[in-house]
Length: 221
Image 1: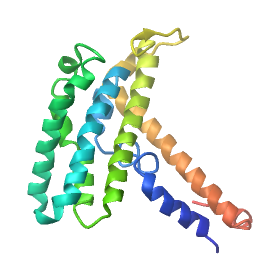
Image 2 (image 1 turned 30 degrees about the horizontal axis):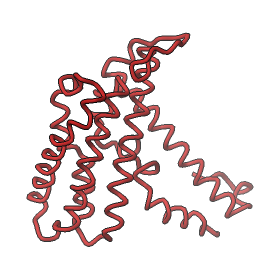
Image 3 (image 1 turned 120 degrees about the vertical axis):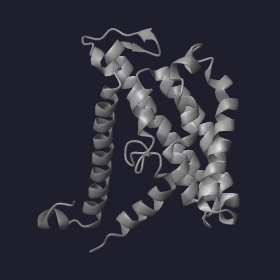
């Protein structure tokens, strides 16, 4: 049974897994508190995404460079401290988005330095992984985090407040409940199911193209 195309797809997707196939929020379930609580407004989703990108990339690269020389727990503490410093320094980048953004997000800004995506990638790349792969993972996982937060926050703001980026949008329906934190669970779950379904359909198509007789024998699972 020829599965060469499927193997090639898996090998190629490893380089971009954090963006879609293994999206840190919608597939791996990492950093869920930020996807659930701070995503009732697109501005907040974009602001948190910017802070994540600024902090995640340096932490992962630092872990790749010096991680082997340090025990696991001190390495995680150093990454958390570095992330905190970078986030505080990056706040001027997000305050133009909204003047009250730091007051609104409150404790979630410093907590971002302790999120599970940073811990996961720092531990993953503290061993002798290629430096380029560490950089690609940092970029794609931060991009995947931004994609998930922006999708969730855009949907919740659009249908929960009938606005997008604070600009009123005329829609036939307004679901005010989407603005409460609990709805973040529902929207995240629906998008997670959608991402997984798309990936399964894509792999199934590759499988069928590689094995024309598979459709007669049974379906791909």
